Image 1 (cartoon, helix red, strand yellow):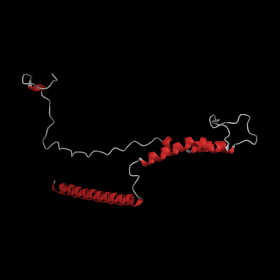
Image 2 (cartoon, rainbow, N blue to C red):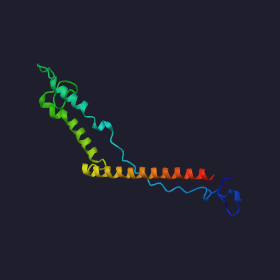
Image 3 (cartoon, helix red, strand yellow):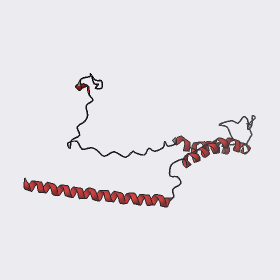
Image 4 (cartoon, one colour):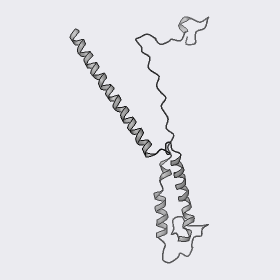
Length: 153
């Protein structure tokens, strides 16, 4: 029977509890790990290919205008780009840059100054040094305790 114990059920059906003696020391509760917010996709910041394509279209304007000149309502996506159509063609790139800027500003701690970050780095380095010193001290105590036991024993 694997159900919970009831007044009419057998005692063996009671849920087993872990031993609580000194042989099983209780672990200290772990502090909750801070979860990092999800980062934006790398494609959010990948504007160089689009910028290269736009500039290449602008540079590769032929000397003779094509018979079918693109209009702002019907631009050729990969064809040459006239200077008067640059603003229209750059709109998508401007929107992508704006989206990337908003994504960066939404990241945590973007308002912190370099001095704030340097202070935190120094604090954390000092904390690491204290922890290392404490571990070395514990190692020395352990070595001394091992030496004492070998003499008595």
